[in-house]
Image (cartoon, rainbow, N blue to C red; front, top):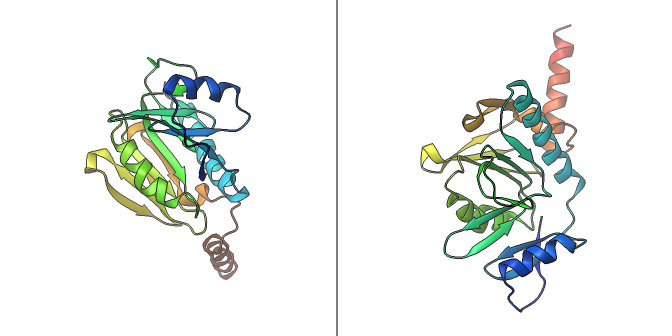
Length: 206
């Protein structure tokens, strides 16, 4: 989701958190500045919903102690300054969280890209997320075409890219899902071509 600066006046962390509880729209907080979040597209919602569903099913099947959160839950990032972001999907396995309205200890963060968020998700947020001690995997998903990029801490934050026909293993929760399932019901050009090729292949096999 894109960010639009709300005001030039900086506010404290406590002021942001209290205001966010009462606000009708979501805001992200970066070094004292508050940014309003734009409404997500239908494709964005489909992709993030698919990821949430597939990971939820796998966690339940494994009787995992981990919790999964959608884009209504904030993550707190603290380093040189404090920031709060709303990841599209987040998995947390540490139950010792200090607040009901944000998480401190994610192991996986997923962001779905759009034209307005690409720079933030691939630069500002990525670098901030890499500083979260518990984070093992950061996932960036394209919505205009079918490509998923996964950064892994145990690979020194080097990334692997996945495409239709591939499966992605999230090592931190021992779970595998397919790229096809991530893009279920998404009608971008890559997905439509993939489904058409499958249809032709099935017809030839009859």
